[in-house]
Length: 74
Image 1 (cartoon, helix red, strand yellow):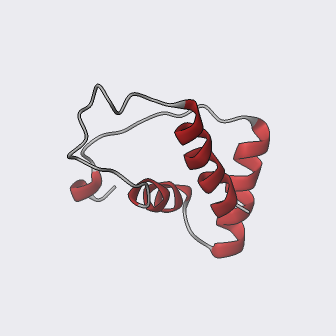
Image 2 (cartoon, one colour):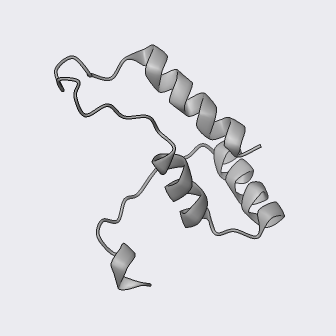
């Protein structure tokens, strides 16, 4: 593993269908899952000027980001 990326390691839980979509996308594109997930994270919109208390997880925002993730895996 390239040490410049070894900053944080996370574990995520995916439903079988989500994992199958990710694997299928990776197989079709020839890209590793780590790269695909990293790219999706980088594409998330953030606004550092918003107070964290005001930026609590909101279901509608979570659904939007989850939808973007699934669309990218199609």
